[in-house]
Image: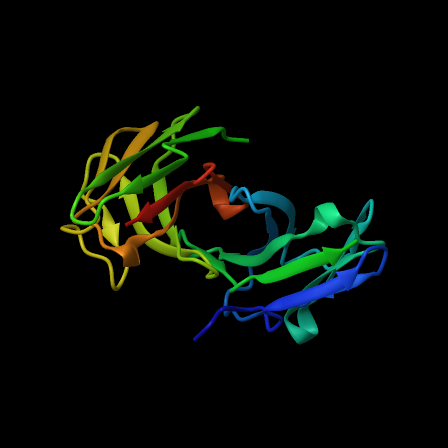
Length: 114
Length: 114
């Protein structure tokens, strides 16, 4: 079973629009971490945010914000006033307290059109 | 944070040949991880490289095809053997912060097999 689901394969928005990337996860652990990574066309993975399972407080960092809801097992990512440089593939990931593996979603390819 | 140097960053190889990818970490780590990202796909864990013992391979990956070395706590290599065009992917090495609170990635090796 897929532990991290990103239902949106591709999204296109016009510059300055807001966009939300969805992430749903599945785990039986009570302690876990959720992440978002950005992968620009160059290929490297850029860490954006980490959230632990005990901290449901939403976070805002500049144009980025994250909405963590344990009740729906979701960790959604919103980019406000999108820019062309935001064009990339975004991965949601889960790490559990047990084991040593990161579980990645299938990624959402975001294209911001100028 | 951990700084991971991975090389080569990209290569174009002939089918039937082998390529060895190197991963150097700036600090000692117990486990290093090798991922494959096929075009347009998410990251798939190939194996976990442990210092002093054989690597642990995930389902669908075998040592004969992806031999791994881990001679010390800061270095690992992944070899892609007897390559075919289906091996064209980005290969990434990764290490974990203690308690799985973050994963750090190398810059990736973009491999094209012709």
